[in-house]
Image (tube, rainbow, N blue to C red):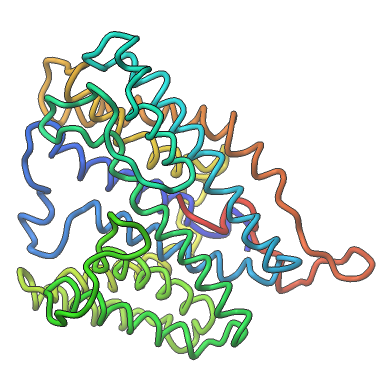
Length: 363
């Protein structure tokens, strides 16, 4: 599947935009997510992240057979995640932070919080920078979007273990998707008292982790067994279930499942115009990484005298510009280091001619 034979690049941009818009309302005046308020399903940001994880599950599953070894597989995944993340952490700590902090330079750079923030580059999540965004409507969290990245890496790990133990068995992925669906509902409602409240790191709730892994394995399922599971009526049934359970504990679970399923069915087609969205690069990861801190800056220290809609538009333009720089300066050069697996004689298996570098992962 070539880059322009599908619409996944466009859908990743849509997903990143959903997250940006969802966060923006809260940054501007502390209001709730309008999509959740009006539908009773889940937040628009959650919809966007579910799209990312499902697309990731679909393409990472496809890319497993391209890797020479599990080590190569994980190295290639790391090349997509960590260079862009490290650059974002450094820019945030040493460029944005000093520009917006309420402290003087000495106070900022001698604070332990400044140096602790660098741990984000290795997925040890740290939220504050000293004197940064403390008076904002959503104070102190400098880049709240980073919480999904440990879950993403954990999803890669579980897929690799699954592939080594069972092979990429098309029967296992849907079972895991269902298991994470149940775990999400059970943990989000506290139905099993002995379940731990958090997992992976000290700041990730089990419920939030489970919902993203559910989306990831729905995408993996559709890659492994599209004939059985890739049917539009399944998306429709999940959407109807979500609407029927609106404003109940079940609604977010069904909504995430419907989104995760439907986005793959949409993405596999080369829709007019939008299938060219990735012609110049994949800017969705940069959009996701930089949106939160730049929106916080625009909602606080750099706040313009405009309404919320104009604020969202200015935010999008600013973040997109930074995302483009991130792609060409950091992400694209890093992706060139990926290695392809060749058969004897240098042949690439026909079934593995996938868009390995740009399509294999999201965010």
